[in-house]
Structures are given as C-alpha cells and as structure tokens.
Image (cartoon, rainbow, N blue to C red):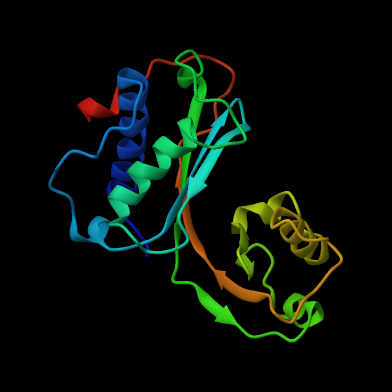
Length: 202
C-alpha cells in the first residue's frame, strides 16, 4: 500500500484517539466523521498491536477487508486495549507507557499444498503472514511473528497449536492463505513516562 508518513501518523493518531475515548467513556465509541485521504478509506484489513514496556499488551485485527482502513484501525485499536481475551482491559495508569503498532494487510492469497512439506517449501520467512483454516477453526500469524519463531517448521506447528490442532498433525482439508503487511508504529517505551499530547487534539 505504501502509505506516506503523514498517512501513517494519521492512522496512529486515530488508534490513540480510539483508546483515549475508550478510557474516557468506559465503552466503545464509534469513529467520528472526518475528512480523510481516499487511501485511508480503502477497504483493507489491519491489525493493531499494543505494547507496554516492550511487552505485548493486546493485539486484535481483521483478515478480511470489511471496513475502510481508517475505521478498521479505529476498531482494532479499541479491541486491542479493551477486548483481547488474553488480557484484562487496559488501565488508565498503563496508557502513558503504551505504544501502538499497526499492520496493514495485503489481499489474502490462497495457496494449494498437498502436505506440510510443500507448505514449508513455499513459505517466505520474515515476509509471509500465514492463515490456516479447517472446519470452524482458523488461526493466523503476522509476519512479525517470524522474529520470535524464525524456524519455518516451528512457525507452522505453533500456528496449528494456536488453531487448536496437534502441532505435528496435518490434514488434506486444511486451507492455506498467505499475505504480507505494511508495518509502522510508535517508538517502544524506554521505561520513562513522557508527556503525550492527546490524539484528539492532533
């Protein structure tokens, strides 16, 4: 997608505004109407990751392009802060130490493979995000996960476990999709509290 710095900063500001309002109102708040560049109104999937002191604090997103990009980021920022089932809702005193990372997804590409070996042969480490789906279970790893799981065998097996399947299993009914992402975010917190201007004033 290749957004310019101004467009990236606008999406980060929208994500921060969404969480600001969530903390203020203690509930979901719809994105207000505003004039945005056409690029930010394209239907695109995104993920928003929230970290505090460099540690994961929430990550939610959509694989499908169901909303305008700006709205998708707004929704996913709120969900990452308040609705990720792995974490309790973000507390107000955590917010000054948090930073936001946005991943914009390319269109999903279906891949036909007959075995796990074929899947491993076509995977591009540090480039591909991966979706595995079977019956009513589906799981994905963003390309950033390669940083924690650089070995393709482990990458696929951990993803199968995330979907609820045995890591060493394989089924011919597994559907495979891959995608790439455009990534950008705020600097990681250095442990010091710095004043932040509310994104609502941006």
